[in-house]
Image (cartoon, rainbow, N blue to C red):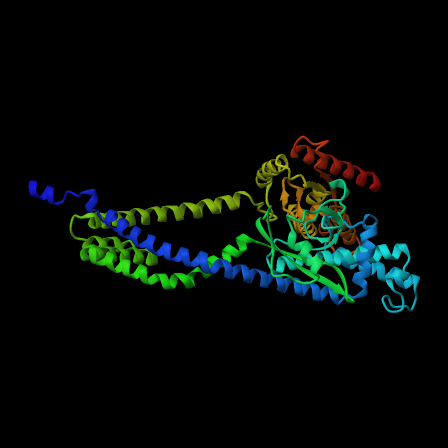
Length: 520
């Protein structure tokens, strides 16, 4: 017994972990050193050149697109440099704004110059001041959005178009895709044509490219909110006249990511060193350990693929000996059994919990969320308000004549009326959650598009109810009448989301009284 205990005593320097770690560390250090030298001596320069080529491509594409505009772009730029404060564009504008403003300009042009074509019969310089403003408004917005889209297409941090002004000290940002407000944020006005003071020492290639009038082989490099950034510049010429610089930014992190993607090609050459090291490691480690580890790995994979607990029995029957690997195999077989039992219990519990939660939060009649779900959602909305997200509104809707329908036609017909109202509410406020919090009461939590379009949606709801009355084919219990009240969170009035609900409820009852008075 004494000799057996000595035989099975394990020294730390004889353990598999120590031997594998020491040898693998030596091999890894050799491979990392070889790969590191190759990467930083070859790839850094190569990818910097590739970055310049990509920025040249993007800048050239923008330049060609702008050159195609011809005289329109020239006259627009000249006008904006002197009248940018007269052009008002919303801070949060999009494609719809551009389309609407273009239509306004075309309509105004046709009224002012019937049977004339802009740019052919009537040039920009002959337009009235109002028409010039209208043209520049939609034209600036259109090109601003285009620069923003290019930025997204190529996944680059910044694209912009500038006009260097002065002796290497000022730059006017004509198209600046970093949106900023003109004045107070509440005015919702986009800041245009920012005249920004730049130092030649900080951006030498910008001013050198402008002075040279052609693309250069170098880039500016500086730190900003994106990290370390490259900037490349492409001059814009229209009718052989230099107009401005198209600027493309690319963060160095992007270049580094490209380097990492190409490391595989270099690592393949270094893999020979790794293979030699692993071969040495395989010779040193006892074959019995490798075989046992391989068997354990196969059983683990089999259990992972099939989730069959019988794998544990097969693993125990295969493992022999009292070394580290054998002990590990026995531990794993025990874990397989425990894990199998745990997963069975967990799956069963999760299914039961999910079914009970789903049932508890839904209204049985209408299928929408119930009062319990509404109370839980109010807690989330209160948290959102306290953390600055205050664009929330509540609509309270109460069904009229439910008691009369129940008394006259029966509760089944009353349930049809309730369901009909629920369908109308869900159809109108389709982007917001709807809750049935009482027998004939529904609540809508306005968010997103429904919050932005709340007034028009309320009008649509009331119009939908009115149109029902004109349908002679509907039964009395199918013609829905309801009172609606709406309130929007106001930090000067509401101390909590509960106050918003109360104001919506009060507004609903006020509307209900008005409807009753109108009927009488």
